[in-house]
Amino acid sequence: MQLVFYYDLVCPYAYLGSTRVAALGERAGVKVEWRPILLGGVFRAIGAPDVPAAQMPAAKLRLNYLDMKRWAAHFGVPLQLHPQHPRRSVEAMRLCHTVDGDHRVRLTHALYRSYFGDNRDLADRNVLAAVCSEVGLDPELARTGIDAPEVKDALHRATDEAVRDGVFGVPAFIVVDGAQRTLFWGQDRMHLVEKALRG
Image 1 (spheres, one colour):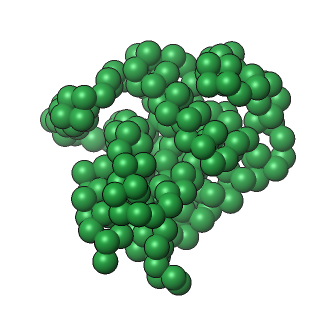
Image 2 (cartoon, one colour):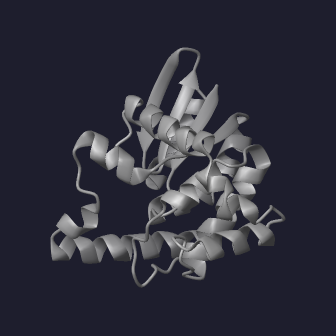
């Protein structure tokens, strides 16, 4: 058994999921693979609007915002949308592909806190470099590393794989059991992910 966690840093629900997925993996006794993808790339691949919230009725948009705030309060984590949310995340998502393992997890948490806690602009490479420094990584990863062809390719490959897995939004979780890959979507369905991992 293995768990793949697909995420994009611009999604508040993926942020909420990120605060609990490691503990879920530990309880279920499985390895969690943190897989950064480009949510806009998924939307384009499946023919969805680039910013789904822009197409929501006003009442649903208001409730959607209240919903994420209620979940954040429930889990005791800060969540404040950037004044220009959603910000461009492609450089930040490439940055996540410059490292792996524990470095990726630590960097991802720091980037999420920067965006949803401090409202720093993840589209700004200087912000990305500062976050790298804060977690003990080389800030050059954010200035030049994210432009490496292999890093760009890694993000594209991960996004393409997510689409093949049936992903249409994040957070998305793939429970891998041998050759079988089962998709779960949404931070509010993580109890179902854990149930599947426990068989």
